[in-house]
Length: 486
Image 1: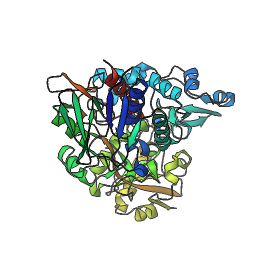
Image 2: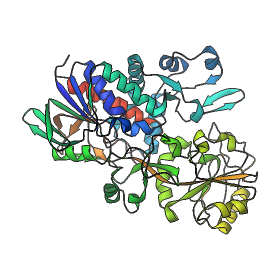
Image 3: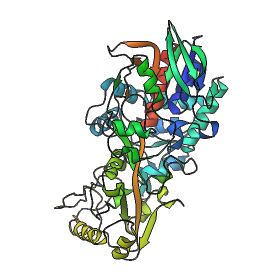
Image 4: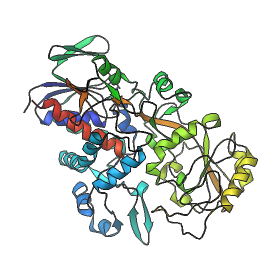
């Protein structure tokens, strides 16, 4: 057991997991959360709570969800998701640039970390509403994503906060850490620009730089300062900056980020009352068109949880930085719950011509031409199946659709206006598999650790859905352990 004083900078899933881990190994833990209590929880609080983990089958699912009934087990095909599957997915979507040591830690510790959280009292549920469809009378999961936290992101933060508080973790809200100074073997942590406290170890878990318009423009490129921020307004790169001042190395895809299709009229920062409801992720079952009325991406390239995190940047590149997702009656029952929120930007019509008129800023004639060409290009001999990559594709188009192509011909039609919503940035601090921050020589900076979205090297270009919360928990737990080790 350790008697060290450990400071944790941040307030989300990674920070709280680090706090719980360090505290259970005997450290005196103080967590500094920049946000006020009502806005606590970082980006984690804005998520739906989906968590990607390996599991061998239904028995391991039952370990995480002991309240599942026999009927639920009998009527659900949970499948399995092996370490090899996770490695394949992470490698494929990051174009095999992911750091192998970090990837191995994430994947091999995913299920043990959820089991650890369950032992602490965190509750999990099957991700029925977003990752399963009923086929032949049975719920079938798809895309390797089966688990969600009870109560979504807000529920997860509430549960972790309660656990940390019961373990006597001290949490200070409205406490922005503005500087960290090394003084021999101690760290002086300055809060709100003046007050300073001394600690033996520091864990940084305060997010990337997605909430800074200036840093987005500098690192991500033109027009990224115009993107809407899905989550917290407090992730402005403080942790990265302070670590660099201590000699930390940076790594990863600094011009890359997690960005999604986000409601066209959503506010500039996340709204906790709506949470992740502004996202629009059922595009694989329709078409996505820009202001010229043209398709510009392959809606059916893969399951949505392997494409949604990169398609926000494609929308940002379009005229006026907007797009519309178009569906007909055949697929409306497949749309996720976020399409039915009160705050949605939606138009509907009985004809495609009317729909084109009602989609603000769209060339109606271009839209009609696009739908006609798309309808005529579908390989309709292949049956439609939303639970697998069914190969029902188009042929001969400039941008073909690879799966789930259906004619848009069954009115009334619906269209949803979207823009780019940034979630988090991919560039960050270089850490090793102990969650220790490294310097430019590749050596550990003694006593400095990092977890969560400010860690670089894990994601490039894209991201497998649900792996963010998982990485935060895994690296947070590891950072807490490392910070208390001799």
